[in-house]
Image (cartoon, rainbow, N blue to C red; front, side):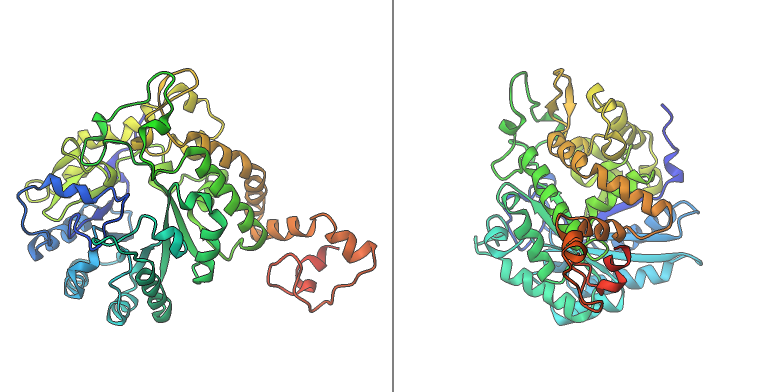
Amino acid sequence: MIVPNFSEQGLQITAKPIGAVCNLGCTYCYYLAKKNLYPNNRRWRMSERTLAAYVCQQIEAQPAAVGEIHFNWQGGEPTLLGLGFFRSVVKIQQQHVPPGKRITNSLQTNGTLLTDAWCEFLRKHNFLVGISIDGPAELHDAYRLDKRGRPTHNKTEQGLKLLNKHGVEHNVLVVVNRRNGEWPLEVYRFCKRQGVKFIQFIPLVERLGSTGQSVSNTRLASDGQSPIDLVTKCSVRPRQFGNFLIAIFDEWLRHDVSRVFVQIFDQVLAAWCGQSPSLCIFQKHCGRCLALEHNGDLYSCDHFVEPEYKLGNIYQQPISGLANSESQQQFGSTKESSLPRYCRDCDFRFICNGECPRNRFAGTPEREPGLNYLCEGYRRFFKHVEPVMAEMAVELRHGRPVVNVMHRRNAAKSGFRKQSVSEGHTIGRNAPCLCGSGHKYKRCCGQRI
């Protein structure tokens, strides 16, 4: 197996400038327990010195061919640092950006602390904001509570409205759990009512006993044991997750192609077009999406912030050396080499590549270890969307928009063609098209009848 030279690939780092400190106490948060890595720590704020070292080193670590250098700020809750910290971020970046390069920033937040001043800053400096919200209040507030156990939906929704008000580019991150996983259309339609155009669905898979523990030390499913027995009651079930995606995909296909962008749909379509997925969980190899803690400690991955996956500290060795180290290359290549035969022979391997290694604790039908917990759900979803994705890929190969697929399928629905022609019922040429595209009938399906 030939693994590409890491030093030739772009590098992404999720920076945790306030560590695991957050103003919320979400039931399922995987990062709050990372405080245990620094038991004697009294200061969680990234110092100006560490910030400057990080910014400079990340710029220097990028291959020459990379024209855009991206900084991703997460937590914990990064807005707890205040605007002054992020003004320093922008200032340092502007001082060190190389000629011909472009620097971009993204900020992942729960939205509860956003203000007009925050949004003005984010808009001015073109930050992409990811806001975490799990659907309408009755679903969001099931697990996303503050430190005193109070609901947070209203504050998060206000933050989302402020982003819209100020024209801040943003997307929504929905954690799909066992509660909202039963209500896919309610979640999706809620997001649309908020004016959201870009949505990420992140499946919650939380292993029992994994909080604060090493992933490598958690149990695997033994013979005859269901993987569901190894996850918390908050975690989405595999089939439930597949059904969740299918329900939303069908709704999206009827109404929202080219109007709402769902990350996993885009990733699957890219794979059908022969492109390598941009999302790390679906890539063949890991290792280019690292995590930086507040004190300069660099870890192999955001989901492997654990002692055995600590690469070192940027004060002792620069990011370029740590990210391209032999141990990190081994970490990255193991994703492919550890695939069980069931995955290697799967028709959907070109899309999934076994998904994230942290979720590979189930057994295959042949009882080989290493199957992804979510496999059943992904396979159901991939199989369901296969004919549509193949059709969309044809459109793209011919230089045509994929929205054509939505129009064509809506026009071909039972009764539509017959009603509009055979039965003599006419549709005004300037009336909205019945397919739901938003275009006039004469400019849409009327052209094909």
